[in-house]
Image (cartoon, rainbow, N blue to C red; front, side, top):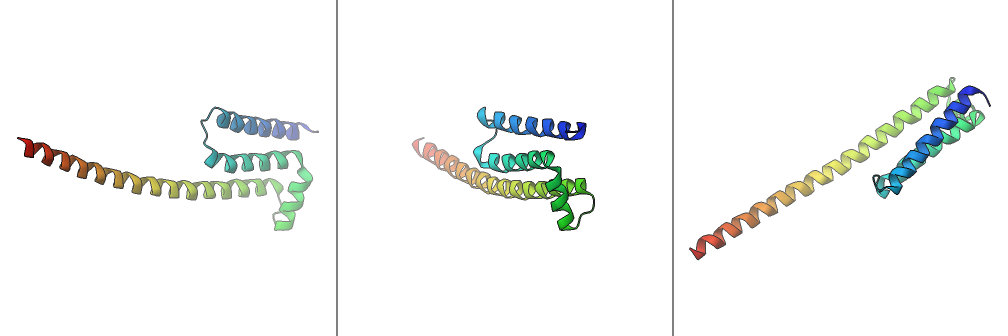
Length: 117
């Protein structure tokens, strides 16, 4: 095992361990953990199996195998951004609904207290 492979393996194991630790401490929700675990295991797999990386990248038509890793990372970031955009949109709608309900309740309370006077 050469130095680059060893370093890639150690970094990959550190990434997997940190994601598992975040899940264990309940800092990363299960909803997102599968995506992060999957991507970290893909990184771990390609750091250990250079032949697989070369085979897959050449079969896709990429001549320089590390470029394939960057392509995977870029695609992963796009998927994460689309997912978080949908979550943010959903939260925005829920926030708007809650604000409207609070305004209605506040109006009802003010009218109810005004009638007592």
